[in-house]
Image 1 (spheres, rainbow, N blue to C red):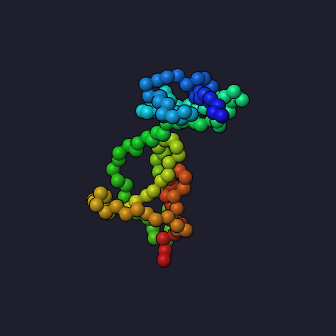
Image 2: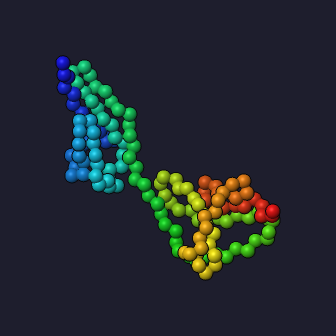
Image 3: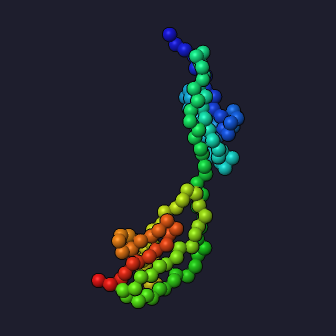
Length: 138
């Protein structure tokens, strides 16, 4: 015996309205393409039949965003060997939280000579992008 089931999607507690970018490819599925800033929100699916209604867990849709660094001249640092030092990273507004990597470049040829810095016990990059070297001696 087959039981009819109906599906209704909700956005932020209200029925999801038909929009040109909202497609229902299969029962219970929704595709939003292309995404716009107006599509951000909490989505839930309600599946109903003669026995009742089941509700999905809310799914949040947030737009990823990343700011940009202001271009500036390369900074040349001269540090004393064997002494710890820290290089500050200018914060960039973005979502989700960014991850950071640092690279060393030969003076005058940054595009050709960039080498990614490998982190470890001695060299660290914190969650805010701060680069620090604990000691430089051998």
